[in-house]
Length: 246
Image (spheres, rainbow, N blue to C red):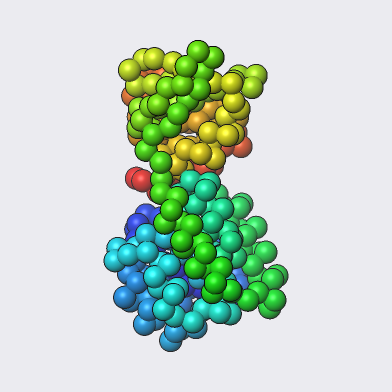
C-alpha cells in the first residue's frame, strides 16, 4: 500500500515515517509540508492512503482535498485539535489519529484501513461538511467552570493541571487557586485542546506548557513544583510526546 504523508513539523514527520516503515505492507511514496507541492505529487504518485495533518505551512489540507481527486483514497488525519473538531473530521475522513501518536493505535488504524480499502469510497460532500465544521470549532481559549456557589470563566493557559476524585474535578491554576467542579475529568479531556493537555494518568490531565521534567520512575515535575504520577498505560503517550518536541 502506497502512503503519502502531509506534515509540517519535522519531529512528528520523522515519528510518522518510523511508524510507517515498521509495517511491511506500507511504502512511503512521498511527503510534504506544503499544499503546493502535494497538489502536484499526489495525483502523479497515486497513493493508496494519505496521512494528513490539518495545518500545513501554506494553509489547510482541506484546501488541497477540495482541488484534487481523492475519491478512492482514504485520508487519515493526524490532528491535535479538540474533540469537537475531531468529531467533524471523522465525518469526512476514514479515521483520525491524535497527537502524540500512540504506536498501538496507529497500527490498529492502519490494519483497519487495509481491510476496508476495497470498499472505501471518499464522499466529497462529507469532506466539505467536515471542513466547515472545523472552521466553526476553533480551539477554545477560555472555559466556564461551574462550582457550587458561582461560575468562573478562566483562561485555558492558566490551568496547570486537573485532578479527578469520585466524580469531581479539581482545577489547579497558575496563581495557586483551586476550583472544584462536579463533573468527571473525561468531560474536560474532550473539551480542552489536545495540543495543550495530556492525560498522563486516570486521575490527572496536565497542561504540557507547565511540564519541566519527566522522571523514569513514572512522574512529571511541573514548573509549579507539583509532582504528577504517570501510569504504566500512559507512559508511552508521555514519552512519545516528549520525543516529538525534543
